[in-house]
View (spheres, rainbow, N blue to C red):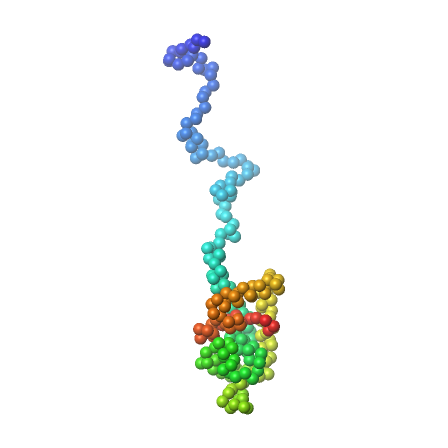
Length: 228
C-alpha cells in the first residue's frame, strides 16, 4: 500500500482521520482537580470511608481507649452510684455511712459498739464519732450491758427505726432502678464476679473499702436491699 506524504512530511489526508485521544497524565489529574458539579437530584458522592463528603462519623462509633478498661469502668460506676445514692438519701438528712451503721445495729440490736465497728471495719476513733452523731439526733442510744457495765450496747430508738425503714425503702427502689436492665440471674452473676474481684483486693463482702482507709466519709454506696 502506498502512503501519500503531505507537504509537512506527515501522512496526507490527516483531515479525514479522527483525532487521537489525549492520554497524557496531566490531563487526567486536571480532570480530577476540577470535577463537574453534580446536577440537581444527583446522589451525594461518597468520600473517605464510604461517607458522603462533609459528614462526620456518628459519635457512637468513637470511644476512648478507657472504655475497654475494667478498672476504669468500675471506678466510674462506683463514683456515679455513690453520688446518686447520696442524693437519694439526702431528703432524709442521712449519710450513706450512717445508713450502713443503722442497718448493722438493726440486724442484731444489743451488740457492743466495738463489735459493730469490727463488723464494718471502722476504726474505733471514728466509730465513736459516728455513734455520737446518731445518738445526738436521737436515732441511736448506748446502753450499759447488765452483765458487764464496761460494755456499751447499741440500740435503735423508735425514731431511728422509723427513719431506717424509710431509708431502706428508698434503697430498694434505687437498686431496682440501677439493675433494671438485668435479669435476676444476671444480677447474681454480676455480684459474684464483683465479689471475686474484691476478694483479690482483700475486701470482705459487705464492708466498704473506704472504712479500711479510716475514711468513712467515702462510704457512699451502701445501697443493697435488706434481703441481700
